[in-house]
Amino acid sequence: MFSLIILLVASYFIGSIPFAYIVGKLFKKVDLRKVGSGNLGSTNAFRILGIPLGILVQTLDIAKGLVVVLVVSNFFYDNLPFANHTPFEDITLVKIMAGISAVIGHTFSVFVGFKGGKGINTALGVLASLAPIDMSITAGLFIVVLLSSGYVSLGSIAASFAFPTIMFIRQNIFNVDIYGYKTLIVFSILLAAFLIYNHRANIKRLLYGDENRFENLWLIRIFNIKAPLKKKIK
Image (cartoon, rainbow, N blue to C red; front, side, top):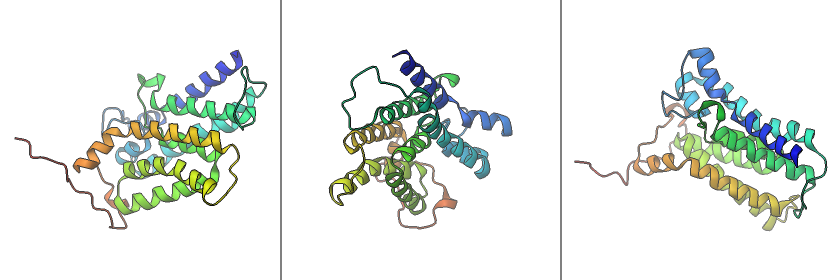
C-alpha cells in the first residue's frame, strides 16, 4: 500500500509542475496567473506568450500525462494491495490511477496555490497512452471544431464529450474489441465530466457570446457563435 501511495503522490507532483507559469516567467517575465484568463494552460500561453512558447507549454503539459503512465507507473509494478475486479492487468489499473493523479495535479497545482490549467493536455497524454486510436480520432475532432469556430474551449469541450462516445461506438456498434473497455469507458466518462466541469466558465461565456476567439485559427467559417443569451444590462 505504501508504494502505491508514493506512486500517486509522485504522479500528482509531476502533474503539478506549472509549465505555463515557468515558461512565462523564464522567457517573458510574465505571470500568466495575472494576465489574460489567468489560467495556467496552453490556451492562455498561446494568447499571451505567442505560438512558439504556447506550443512548448502544450507539449510539456502533454508530456506530464505520458510520463506518469509510461514511465513512473512502471517503477511501482508489483501486486496491488487490494483485489482487482477490473478486466485490466494490475499495471494498467495502476497507470489509470497515476493518470488521474497527474490530471488533478495539473488542475490544482501545489506549487502555485492549488491553481492550474484545465487538464485537457495532461489528460490527452494519459489517454493517448491508454487508448491511442480513440484519442487520435478525438484529436481530429478537436482540430475540426477549432478550425470551424476559432474557439479552443469549444474544441476541448467537444473532445471531452467525444472520447467516451467514440469508444462506445467502436466497441458496441463496430464490434471493435477494446481491451479493458468496461473499465476504460467508466474512467473516460468520469474524466470527461471533470474536464467539462473545469470549462464551466468557458461554457457560460460561449452561451453569452463573450468567449475569446482565435481569429487566426478560424479558418473554416461555419460556426459563428454570437450572443443569443446576452441581455442588456441597465
